[in-house]
Image (cartoon, rainbow, N blue to C red; front, side, top):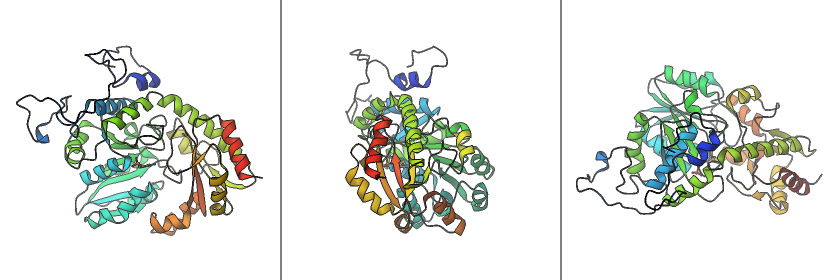
Length: 403
Ligand SMILES: *Cc1c(COP(=O)(O)O)cnc(C)c1O
């Protein structure tokens, strides 16, 4: 891509070409997969990562690898970020960020509903290290303002949040966070850069689980943190390289390949999801559908303002969700009853509110519990709409749900 001088190239061209270059030895047009863990070094190469510069200078694959580097460059271009650090999974990226930024005696404000593993480590493991965590509904800017203290280092939000699809106004939160001298991290896995570019709205860090839309095919775990070189160069040395949760070059290569079709896939995810959401909204057994591009979404106005693509995740509620889950798991023929999301294959999973509030989400106030109830009731089906023909997805739901 370094040779492209045509100005203002589009996102699909970037997705195909950014970070890639023909192999200088063989002329191979597709990126090579470099699995080597070590590289022939100059005699003056230092043995500690402290001496590592940021340039392409391969020593040891945990420090840096040409295939992983190509992935990081492509992701940074798509997210309009200065730089990116890839990890073995989304949770690998999240824990690296928390370990890097928070020390005993610090305080962080975290979304009260976010990816379950993040919610769980911030309920117990991170506080046990002496870091104080306050959980708030980040859709409510006043509760963020009220939670910030002099020792607040980080505010962590997820929008749309998993699993509720509740939204947070990134620009408004960034203003409050920066006025307090703290930093803002946004998990943008559900939105993807096709919808929202949090760094342009004032966030300091963007996190993605590459396992979801960016990889897109359900065959490789990965994660990434994007931001400025000033913030991420020390993070790479301290927490990626030393803690060691780096991505395998093979996974990086698979995700790089998935990314080539990313903008095209997101258009189809959105188009399919809107058709299926409209079908579900009129189904007699369906009590409530949540999808950010439906006027019935409680934050429709914010969705329109902040999201350029509405992605492919829908939630819906029915009577006796647990029973219906058994029926769907047995009867669905195209849609897989499975966790995860953002794949070319459609996936559905039932999330029971009482169970999740036992294991993952603890609410300190009645307002927080009420917001959960507003979005999730007794439980929701999280439906990740894939790239199949939407008529077939509707037909599959129709035959499985019955009338
Ligand atoms: C899946 C997911 C993660 C965790 O990613 P892994 O790659 O599974 O570790 C983090 N945040 C969100 C919003 C997710 O959906």
